[in-house]
Length: 413
Ligand code: GAL
Image 1 (cartoon, rainbow, N blue to C red):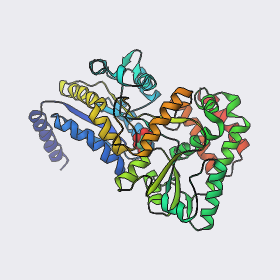
Image 2 (image 1 turned 120 degrees about the horizontal axis):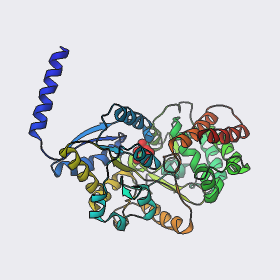
Image 3 (image 1 turned 180 degrees about the horizontal axis):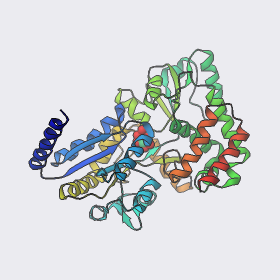
Image 4 (image 1 turned 180 degrees about the vertical axis):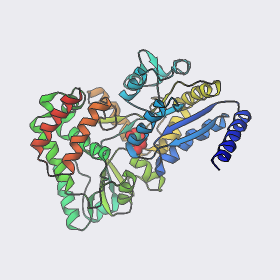
């Protein structure tokens, strides 16, 4: 039976190889929720329209931790996928391992340097060459709310954490789950960094999560961040452990819960379910100044074979193409990475994101998300998230949490 199966698949492979001469790509990504799948389908379709053969390798798991484990296993076994959803300093880490393909020819032909903001272009470059192609800008520091639930309870979108806490207590008394949350380490980290931005301010956030400054990591303000995390822990329902982020979004959609603190991929879920911003759901940046950005991108791994290399070049070209940047981001909840895509067809949350990004870039408060792998290398961000999640899931004091935070960061260097 085994031999037979092998023979059949070997024949199929030969037949497939013979039948298709042209761009090929095996694409590793973690876009498996409703909104995400709709978004990646745009790229699949454009690739197919250009004669490309796409082999999909989705690895479920929000935030991409499982996808990154799958990637490591594939590269270690000498069989890297051709294109991989990869972002932030992980791009440069893989480059240093000598496994990334150089896509500078496409970048130069398309003039990426002229259409991407410098802050984004920097993430896509490795020692002067282009080593990744950006698809979007997600904002992380958002609060989403069910419009009807807020109205029925006489609550406005909170503009401070005190207001948030007061609203949450009122909702809880009315039998509504105040905060929809999924207890997975990356979701804890997402909420934590949004709270931290509000309480530490942009400079404090940068010192803590970009520069890893010990005094900031152990400051009274950081103690206040953990205090607020403890307060938020009291606003989630008992079934939160392990819940996927999109199921938490669904709780807000159906009115079981009032708020979710999550990046704007959550908007992709609302939109995929036919919900309208301003009517069915509301968006607001979390209390405080600043903008936490999370840029999704694809890196190409060095592979042999003309068809695969052609596929990589085609993908890179399509990804930064104007049409893709528009249609993909309309579905994904994010805004285009390119600065020359008109936002006329985008909704009010996307326009707010774009305006706030420009203003925070001017004002020096545009910051990389640590929770989504934009600010730090994996060892450091992992060390921080371990402390955040063990604090959230125990009765650890805020004082102990900051002490552990500083120690974990020091050990990770
Ligand atoms: C983020 C990623 C988003 C979205 C989210 C949930 O890290 O940048 O595109 O997919 O995870 O999976």
